Image 1 (tube, rainbow, N blue to C red):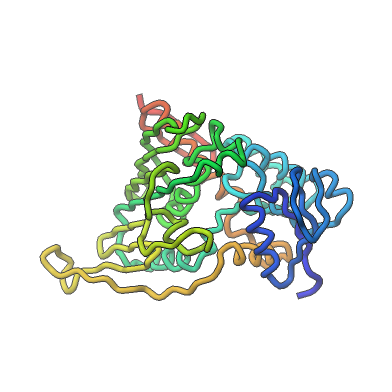
Image 2 (image 1 turned 120 degrees about the vertical axis):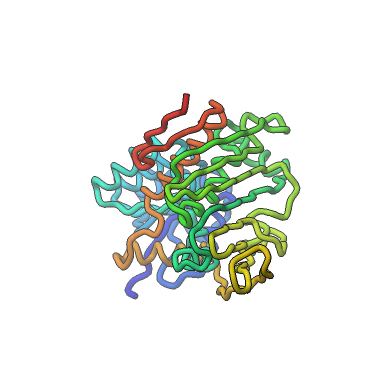
Length: 351
């Protein structure tokens, strides 16, 4: 394995602390520094700026878990120092900003990974394999529910979460959009609605969208951080013990031969001929369990050592961000948005 790869975590908030814990569980990597302007107790040197950290410590990789508005600045600093970087989702505050960062990284050959960690979850990997192998036939529809209630102190400790652009569309729905792209392919049109925050914040607290994919599949997707509900990935996946688990599912994917509920991984199919006149039964599909954040750090180690290419590249993060922007545009304009070439951001609104 060679010498341990030294990592720095930039931003020691809620997500940053999870990354710090994950690093400690991966052989072959070690935490070398933390960058956090606020108070934080760590077992390694803590710096208030990335510039101070780069001047004092040699690191092999950086994990950026700062507020979204700081992602591009931090990413550019890593690129300037030729340091591979794992950037939390969303990749940037805007797709245009993300494109600039990706271009700079490609010009210097610096790997960018985007923190859509759910793709490292065995449940998601098994789902993608089942769909690819034709277990449910041709995918026709998907339904995503992302409802939960964030307490007031979640926003009070980080006031940036109350600002425009920091609502659940960009902060939470981006994960679900990324997985639907992973399962179903590229999105070609978007329609959407959103509602202003009941708490009086600048951002929305409720949104719904209809996504149509190149394959012809259609996905309905809703998100709210002000709805009491058991139906969200956080409460159903058992990824993070801090969330009380429920036995529900939050994703439904239906095809011409069957349907999947996720994350309970039940495959529904008719007995005999495919017909609503015949009994339908569920088969529990086998799946292993492991922490996707730990898996993501192990993957980052492989990327730093040249053993792997990023599972979620900057380009993949950008494509997901383009869809999220299209959802916001559709909700604001009340028009059908055509994405065209998603990688180039060719949005057009139907007249």
